Length: 148
Image 1: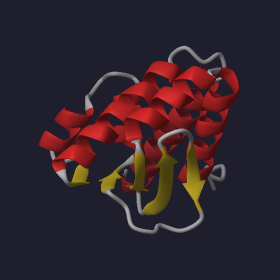
Image 2: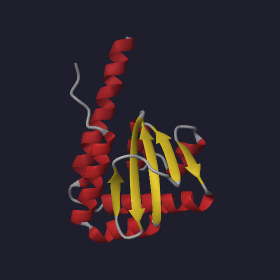
Image 3: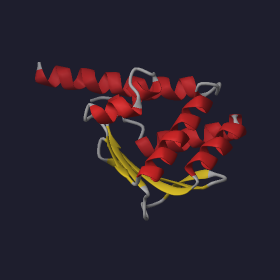
Image 4: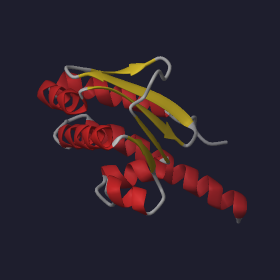
């Protein structure tokens, strides 16, 4: 039996808090890029709602009225975070489904870039990404062992 996985919601929440604490300017730029929008992100079936008022970004308890919806996998999140794949290429390959009006999708893209720009400068983010990436590698190994 494998180790218990960190819920995606917990990982996103830790990431947002880390960015706010360590690099408040990056958090502010992400919020400004997102504007007043809600984004619903589904990763491997787990739904997380992120909301911005243009000045701060936080997790909602339940999805409300998202401007953007994104559906993908943990593996794709790691590939994008490690710059192995862009959001656009992930969508074009069919690994990520992204829905919303053009202006909302553009704002989400810009907000995501600001988040990633801050994350690469954050002293704590490598540890968060390593833990998230290890979970992807261990779940791949478990899946391979079960099918082997």
